[in-house]
Image (cartoon, rainbow, N blue to C red; front, top):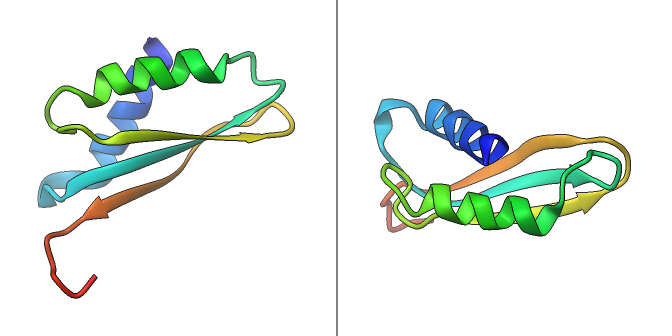
Length: 82
């Protein structure tokens, strides 16, 4: 759960005060990272069910090595031209 909360903190920091709607948070999880991807996904769903995330979805990207990083944030800025 602490990893999920830290990922949420990183996402919130990157969003800043602009307050766009967070849609997806993708996380690279390496096979040797010491993290169970399904457990992390479950914890991220719990974190993203609370404000300011309003139902954002986690997307776990499996990769090789000991990688654990936020890969990207997908946001909806409310502009109709996207």
